[in-house]
Image (cartoon, rainbow, N blue to C red; front, top):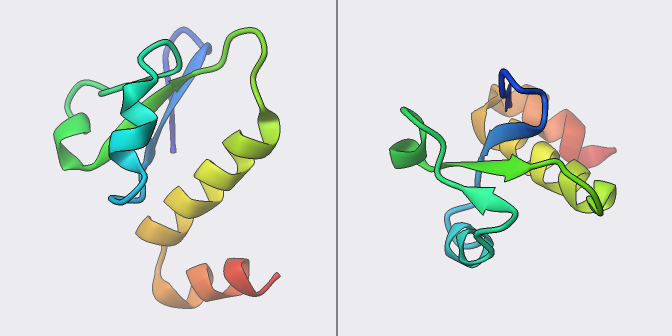
Length: 77
């Protein structure tokens, strides 16, 4: 996960099956520079953020890029 310089958005690796649906909501999600073409998405963290959704997306992102043993420990809890 990467925090944007403005502190109002984050970038994270997205599940390839969920990525197109997330990007359809252009008010909340976008393709971040440099890593957007590598399967990452950006998420605006303005008003009305569903923090449960943010947590789910961050956990998914972590599990996609972390070493398999660490990812398994997150999924087990």
